[in-house]
Length: 52
Image (tube, rainbow, N blue to C red):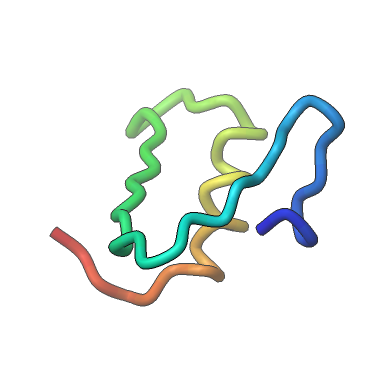
């Protein structure tokens, strides 16, 4: 993640033996900001396909 999305204000810390963490992204069903919809679409490429 740190290599893909570097940011000077963020520090990534690797946690040994940490369990996976589910991350959920949502946008409003209508009238979402175009950048929010773009972010959601871009993030989908990293999804494992699971839901729930």
